[in-house]
Length: 66
Ligand SMILES: [Zn+2]
Image (cartoon, rainbow, N blue to C red; front, side, top):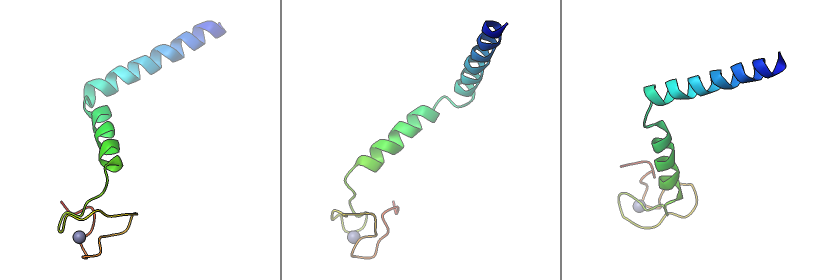
């Protein structure tokens, strides 16, 4: 009985994962891309100088600006 419950639980998890992949096929890739972007050395979008730390650039442009 306990083994049956565990098997059913695992099957449910696999089903949820498959449904999630079918609905959002790019979710995992997006996460990886975001991480790689976060790991890049920050450069200012306006003046191009490297930004050290988490604050905005000295020229006043915010880091999130495209
Ligand atoms: Zn700047």
